[in-house]
Image (tube, rainbow, N blue to C red; front, side, top):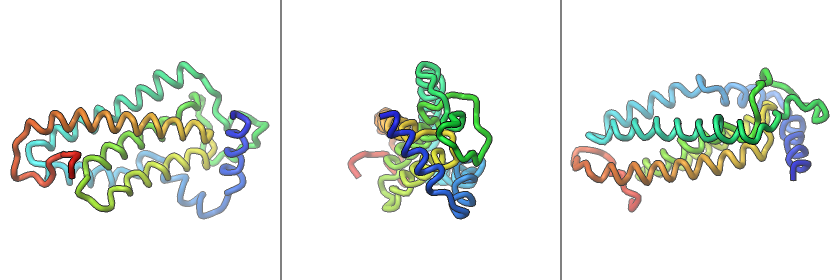
Length: 192
């Protein structure tokens, strides 16, 4: 399994090397790149979710805190898998500086899938909500492409993040039903 993981890593990191991916994926995996999206989501929630807006933002933060803690503090420090960019036998193409932190799981994948899943559920009225999952997938793929994570790091991080996002949204939904707000755009119901 780990041998296949290394081979798929090489295929993505080296085999798919091209100028377009370098131009697109390197900045897309950086947290500052997405500040306009985060600001838009916060502004949208503040203006359209009525009394539930602060609850949405609170759970958004809780979701991120839990996912990052699970990935960075619990799993990484327990598994202690070396990053592929430190494994010279993989001949990694290093497109960004190689971190000295551990590789498994990808915190980028865990965090973005947790947030993406939460938003996917929250915006049940939005027909393009699947874009949140595409966004998380691109960031996960970029982590392999730039050389800092194995595919298995991203896959497991994605699954854990998705589970955290679903649990967080379901707890949020229970709290949100206590707010009676006819002016709000969304009623945070999983039925819609």
